[in-house]
Image (cartoon, rainbow, N blue to C red):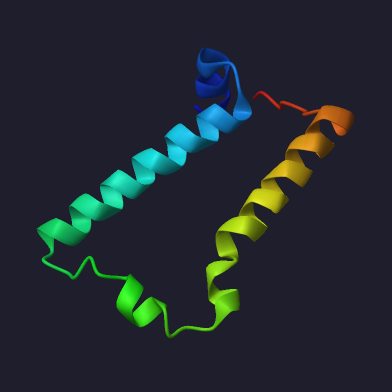
Length: 79
């Protein structure tokens, strides 16, 4: 699915943005339906700074995996 979205949009960054945006919208809808608070900044501002680095590390991980796949390639096993 992600590969098809990348092909359609013409860029891995665009496809990642659309994918994460879709997930964010679904999470917001779930928060609204379950009547949970959307104010994440008040308690979040008191959190340690490194708690906000998860997205950055995820992006770095995906970039490394993507670069490795270009070099190593992918093996498809069909039954």
